[in-house]
Amino acid sequence: MKRLLALGLIGSVLLPVHGQDPAVDLDGLVRAGQQLVRQQLDAQGLQLAVPVGEVQVRAWLKELQTRFAGEYVLDLTRLRPAAEAALPFLDASEELQPYSMWLRTRLDYLKAADELELLIPGAPTPKPGVPVPPRARPTPEQQRRVWSKVVALEPWPESANRFVPRLKPLFTAEHVPAELVWLAEVESSFQPGARSPAGAAGLFQLMPQTARQEGLSLWPMDQRYDPDKSARASARYLKTLHAEFKDWSLALAAYNSGDGHVRTLMKRHSVRSYDRLAPYLPAETQLYVPKVEAVIRRREGKALAELAVAR
Figure (cartoon, rainbow, N blue to C red):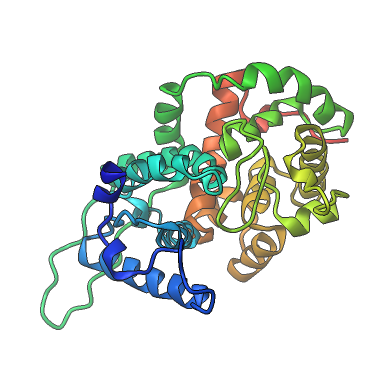
């Protein structure tokens, strides 16, 4: 316990959730925690402070999710040490373990962001009266190269031995390339119990609305946690996305950030290809698509463009 408490930089200013008066405004505490974490981020050059206590850790996770939703990939740099330090705390709580599965899978995103920062020139020295130009964004090609390097060092997930042979036929049955079963490595590292702060759940991290749209029930049992049912739902959704966007990279971008969002961005910026769309996508999606491609190339020896078109 002392070791876990030593991780915290902000725990002393927020009430712990256990033993609280029932009248305490938990939402207010979470908002206060988010504000404090944001101040810590600004003060420490984006080095996310490690929280202590359930209220603080939930605020911390939501703030990290907010960073993933931003447009600038390099806003994720230097967050990995804090994320790694938070994992033992998440693992120690049965209620928070699903978030640990989610966060552990996304450590690679933070690693890739650090690698990308080395490729991007720093911001120029400000001059009085002259606006500072924005720092360059990592290009899709730079991200592909970095992900090839990061994924090459990743071991074969242990759970893949159990799930890949079992789930590939389900993708094939939905007329979707079987190789896309490796989305489960990117989404959850083949951990069926994973859950994101945004509410996505299961092997393929389906959001509630998408799950219902694809025929899954969330009550009384959440079928997103059923590997077979979630695989079929994921495959059906991917098939629908590919039918609309005619490209697996765009379909994956829509899978991660929402088809409506991708549709809107393509129209707003008058772009039709993934590489031209990428700079406008959320940071997580910019990292997600090349990671999926790198994983499939590593595990199956195929590029996204080589995958069979859904029938």
